[in-house]
Length: 330
Length: 189
Ligand SMILES: C[S@@+](CC[C@H](N)C(=O)[O-])C[C@H]1O[C@@H](n2cnc3c(N)ncnc32)[C@H](O)[C@@H]1O
Image 1 (spheres, rainbow over the protein chains, first blue to last red):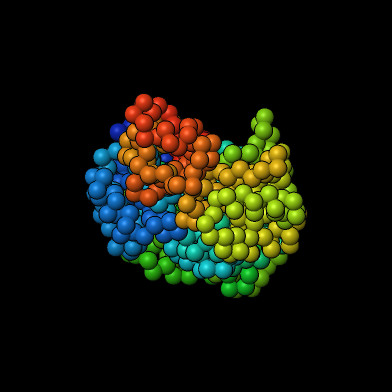
Image 2: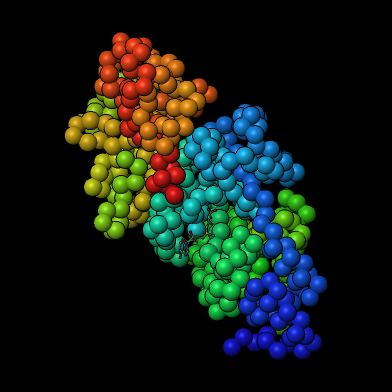
């Protein structure tokens, strides 16, 4: 049974009303209220009522932004720029499906939420580096990493799913990626290979709590048991990632979940078990990570992590944290 | 030609290795047909991934080095699959066409209407051809381009070139769709 239910001071009627109004499990709303308070929870739930605008990332391996924009404008698309990422475009108007244009099929862009640009931008992969994407399918971030590496060096793309690795391969091919090695495996075993790399992206499998707007069925289908199960898997993947980094290597941890157990708790556990530190993220003015949730206190450095919310950032719920390894571990 | 790694629901192991002398000569001979500028071959490294098929991949030096250094790893794919070697021939794949698209004159440009239809697997009518390179003959394969100069896929000429301008061929299929970028939507999802 969950420990937070029946918490002192919580008005059960109000949380039940919210759960009913927005179609969530009551336990989920109770958790939200404990984390964010009633006012912020109500704003969050309202935020999840509206789907975020679609966005695309220009694939510079194939085309430059100006040329793509001109072509898409001619087709009747209207875009808005994003202050903090020059190759990203928010779609204001799409006369037809973004996923069926010749430009899409040619790999000139990737349809990707604006939140999902952040982990790769913070990872900041450079040409000729060795990078691992521990949970890569369908390849939104992997193709972005390859782009920033200018298609040089080596990018290991791992995924456990037989179906999803096909999409990964297809997307890497569509985007013209040459520097990838795709491996279908349980990424928890990657450190057994004893490969030490410069940078790692762990865009972890998660409960998808942050996707309530995009997929409303999640509102009732995900419960605390899912979150706990995910948290354990995430810690194991995090541990593999840390063991595969060179000294001073960087690991970016991200999820599309807002639950502290899948985010701050994983990093807090990592800080207690490995020689790592959290680095600042200066990309934009997003909300800080939590330093406490429910009855737990987390490492104060967790405020350097970033959280994104639908009602504040017009995105899905998202978490990202930048980790530096201070000493190699095996 | 794109996803050859699963058969009957089972994933097979693909062994990555260098091209043999014979494979290299088959590959080069085919590229002689396709390429106007063979520096492309010198600038890139190619390897074979052999499972039930023999697929040619282009990849970075670091990718290729890693394959021999960590031979215990069995990748699902590496770099970009550009075609397969089959019965003594190299068959260019959809992504292979994209890879060589700037270095070939085996090109046919089609009009806007045919661009859309071709991307839905359709063949091309005589009236839809905007330009065809003079070196292309009946039964030859070539890359199909839009008027915007976007690579769309691979086609094959079904009729004698001299007939293309004849009125009776304007409504007939003259280019067979071998593969087109719509594959990424139909199969690659
Ligand atoms: C959040 S998605 C990754 C999205 C991807 N990074 C992108 O940007 O397109 C998480 C992925 O983790 C994969 N996954 C789950 N458990 C895994 C494991 N133990 N090892 C490797 N991959 C795993 C899932 O199949 C899923 O594709």
